[in-house]
Figure 1 (tube, helix red, strand yellow):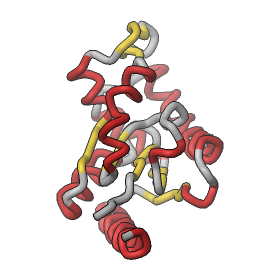
Figure 2: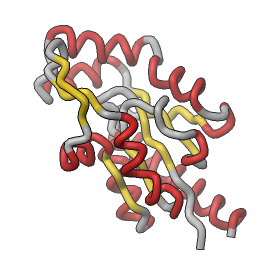
Figure 3: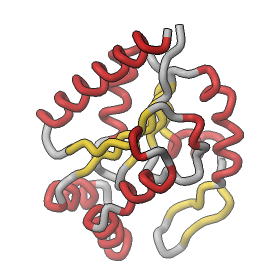
Length: 171
């Protein structure tokens, strides 16, 4: 039975990992956090001193994921999306969080200074939503609010319904 591939994207701290892990638990789909995968496989091409973080080797990430993606039933979690092949995803969800919630979440992760400010600005200016809209067909890109536990439940319900419908339509 064919299953869809989903992309969860958005600014760091919007709740992609929480949503993705819970979706995988409820659906039996494969959850992949690209940041964790890159760390485990050392899929980096350097280190960004300004942001104090490694620089992702996007080509190696794509190579690493290609076989899994062709099988279907994969939930990808990453804060960027323009380097993934368009053919991989049946739907893209961009999580959005109000700045007051996001600031607190990022600060609790140890973000500070330029890294904190730039991530908040990224959310204010809808940078990742625009990246998704320019990288994928408009009709498969959807924004979801991700501020409260109630938003999480609504998002889970909505995505579960979408998956069920996709499976009926494509099997």
